[in-house]
Image 1 (cartoon, rainbow, N blue to C red):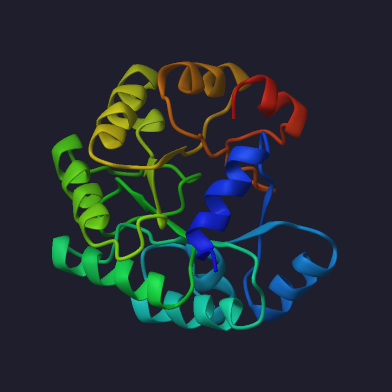
Image 2: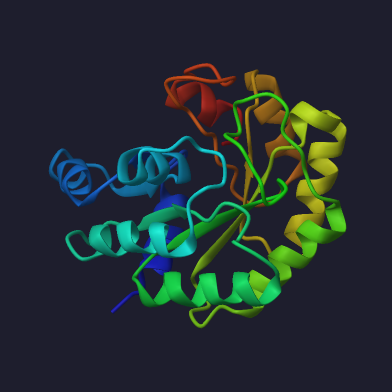
Length: 227
């Protein structure tokens, strides 16, 4: 039987792009499956708002997110991508996060390069760690995998802080460190996605939300840009 990570990789390879719908609890995950979605996403902001009633400011813990993730994977077989924020600590914390996610039936996580007191990626005044520190986060996550098909996605919030050239350089370093996919946060033109896909040889995630910096691009526009 294929692991959820292997199912997720297959879907990403077969769909250009794969539409991953947000689900903040088990019931919304079931509704997503019923209407035909192939994969689902649990965001940190969703856990913060829906389960704790707090803003997306790095307040949630690994335990908070795991609880919601487990509830979702227990009721649906759709591959689940989970927002792991900054990994909730250093290398050992990140390793524990990866193992717990795999044991909970999660298919993939994304880890970002913001500082530990992070904030929503579409808000101003973000701060990021150095490239070297983020590379260490990715390496810790990759080394901890007990399922080789579990997906480690690296998110970078560097566009708003250091610009496009730096964002691509960082993403390249994260792929070299073992990241399976890249999540460039808060891009605001389709051309920026095209530049990322031309520069990075792994799948690119576009975060299309009802608010924030990224316009509501169509699947066709994103596909044409290589997403």
